Length: 259
View 1: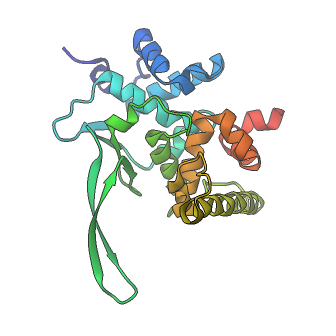
View 2: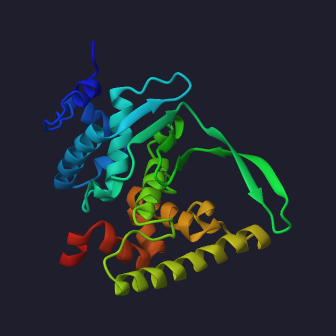
């Protein structure tokens, strides 16, 4: 018997089928940061999730069957960053590849001396420019924790970053002034976070609660900070107040305008 998602994908040219109520409620119940959304945002997220599912193609790797519940769970998390700004930022790709667990990617890097080094990297997810998003279901199915970790939001924020070109730690912004403001606030937050991580690594200071991976580059800091902004806004807004205000302007423009 065809699944709900299979039926959805056969409705060419028609409005997406509504997500079944029981399936939607199970998704909200599993992810507390989604369940905590205001009613109007939940309704908008449900609508966006249905549209997202009608446009994207899910593929299971290593024999994994992507069920309706898995697809809706991933789609709902992916749509959270664009709940106020729309799905157009995800127009540049179609495929979402879901692995049962972490992936091992082969990497190649050339050092300053011209020597090529080969290594393997364990990944929970990856977003490729002009290509698919790859996710570990083991990680994507995690409800989240107080550190604000969320691999789906992380990778889809990379897609936002890539919308207008190579990733640079900033989403598409409407003006030079907006880009200058973003750069100033983000750079200050990033440098402060790097200092915290360095003090913890070298001198045994307390580790910051935000994932230290964000200290590796401005691109990763944008994605890691966005995870925490959506999953644990209360804690994030205490430690990163200027960044919270900046994110509100981009992710929640109507809210920012009325505050």
